[in-house]
Amino acid sequence: MTAAGTATQDQDRHTVSARGITKAFPGVTANDGVDFDADRGEVHALLGENGSGKTTLCKILTGLYRPDAGDVLVGGNPVNFRSPADAYDAGIFMVHQHFSLVSSMTVAENVVLGWQRHKGRGFNRRQVEDEVARAAERFDMPVDPRAVISRLSVGERQRVEILKAFYRGARTLILDEPTSVLTPQEAEQLFVSLRRMATEGEAVVFISHKLDEVSALCDRVTVLRQGRVSGSADLRSERVDARGLARMMVGRDIAFARRSRSAPVAEGDPALELRYVSALDADGTTALHNVTLSVRPGEILGVAGVAGNGQVALGEVIGGLRKRTAGEVRLRGEPLPPGNPRAASDRGLAYVPEDRIGTGLAPGLTVADNCVLKSFRQRQLGRGPFLVKSRILARTRRLLEAFNVKGTSESLVRQLSGGNAQKVLLAREISSAPQVLVVATPTRGLDVSAMESIRGLLLEAAAAGTAILLISEDLGEILDLADRIAVISRGRIQGVLDADGADPEQVGVLMMGGSLEDAGASSL
Image (spheres, rainbow, N blue to C red):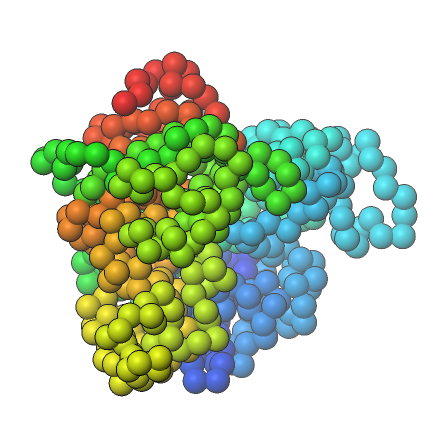
């Protein structure tokens, strides 16, 4: 075959390509000569640490950014996207972690909302519902076109976002961390649908930090590091496991710390107890209902559940940021007054909230300021009523070194990467030598290197005798770190299981609201 014929074949195969893409921002080059192809009929993983350039590349491919140099090609022809609407017209869509759906509208209404094809003409509800139903059947993504979004599960809402893209003519679908909010069963159903899409000739770009999923699902992988392509592999012909993918991402072997369960957890009275705790959301609906849990010194109790099932309320009630409507929280046997975060802190409780920037840290302040936000009253940091800056900076430097934070004492928190910001928050909380540590989604959105570090910090804290309540939507993380697993659904604890030998499928049944009997499991 001639060179021209080969080039034509490549053009027919690629749905979208990047050639020599370069994009710089003040002080950083996000993409530096990046080449990338998404091919028809494949699921292509795009991997890299936080800050590697993945997000920037995807924003260029979807018309949110314009490159400083290089070309985006569709069907082998250079294109100049001026907005996401241009990318939509070229068949390129992205489904983000945070869905853009109107909760009060139906599935069908969301699918056509704002789409050019339906502007200026009447909305034929039945026709759209029938078309959405056919698309759902085609890709094996069951969803009722007439259902109101607010009544759907997280997994069903994700299906609506994907169906919306294909209803509008998607040929390339980019998915950003699509399984982070799904149960194991929902994730497996998603993989079936993605394979179906690839079989029908679409291109799927899969962005994930869950490398086991990448190995199991994807056909090819492209890895970015510091804005450049650092490696690629055809997983259909090359044997590359999760460890190999991690090595491609960070340039070294990654060894995720796991809980050693060879020795029993220290016995004794619980350090943290919740007895029949209930609480409300801001709109007056039930957030927690009769939650009863306990954690002993040195134990890690994992709380597993799909996002939006009461995890935020659970952490806030224990941390004193939300008042409970019933029940009690006890620290070391003594009742904790409701809605009093200072009392909780003074009694030996440390809290790492889900929203590390909005709630846990003050992004406009320096790292040093954030490190002493809860300890500035200590005498060793001041002289009389005045704080001594040199003492604050000395303590902060010790924490940055001990917790391997990349940044300086005078850096603003908002200038840090997600992983380093999370380590600053953990450093502040763990350095107080707490009796109890409540930590919510500690590795969400972080790359494998930051995840490795933070998992190690949690295990070290447990080994030092801290009772840890680990609230996470990452079931793999809970299975690796926890001694016991409490499963929450719709604000209720469905059951508590021994993590040693726990079956992910059983946990998934409980996460979806099933009972222990449904899951074929027994409670501790």
